[in-house]
Image (cartoon, rainbow, N blue to C red; front, top):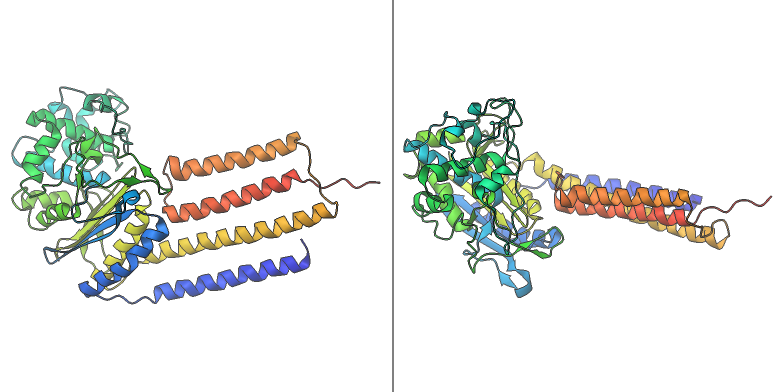
Length: 474
């Protein structure tokens, strides 16, 4: 690389760093406004841009203020191919948000005296039993299952194709649900544990869980467009979209309590309002307070708790199924809340943005986490731009070297094959990490920027390897 190219690259990186710092300052200078109408107007302006930026089909956002659902804001499409807009009646899958309603369903039975929080789960099980292990299965109690402290395996579920028959609840539990840690010793999020609770409720009520939930929880609250029924696919159901923006199947779940609730923002607001109104007759205030009280790691019974920047207590839960992202948060002391449902694997990006903006509206101070997300996005973008510039410079240098006879196309020798193999392994592992196993903590926009960067660098390296230096002739 000649001195001029090196000097240009140095100046380019310095310019990017300066722009990055300036952007960070501008983001932190953002002023909060605690007027709800202004906050709505801000979302009306901001959210459509976010949908486009993150390639999200659509979202429905509910704003609860003073114990009332004040706004339901709908943006984007429930079916992009037919330009069908999101409406107040659009039904979403809400993933693990299902656990909050399921936990209330369990506590309803506790309140009726049909379940004992501290009784072993095995007391109620006849259709399936917790596998024997080195741990005492009698230590797996209802209380511990609700709070993810029972030591039960399986974090979450991938669902079943809508055209295929669902496996039985017993078969699902037999596929790996077991005790993997001493019950009561630690917090370990477990969809498997909540699936055990589903079976317990079916054993006690002698009904399918979705039927019991409809009769005792959903219908009494007026949630007429909501169901745990795996075969519930109303015409108002949104389509689901992948990380790459294409339509994917609306998967169904045997494990209803863990991931199977389908609902609308309007319906779910009724559940939240009941939780902020001493249970609204569904569950007692005492039991509700127990559910909101953290056991370990900030998690109670189906709800997590956090303290906002102004010292107020907020209760929340998030959820993610394939093609869906959802979260709700409420401040019982003010009877304020927010619901964000999306129909995309990329939905976490818009949830992070809108949720942190709402926290800023509620407290007068946008959480620092919001700025961290934005700065991470900027760093990822800068890295991509740098990779593109570096690749272009290297390709120009390679072209000149070939023209000057310093490099030429080489044969596929062992060294080149190793280089190619390493590059392919890097690409496969990277994509598996971000897209197949979904282990990344980064939102999808950042993941895509990082993926493009890695791809460009690997391909550039491979192309360079195809044109080795010519040996000097003595």
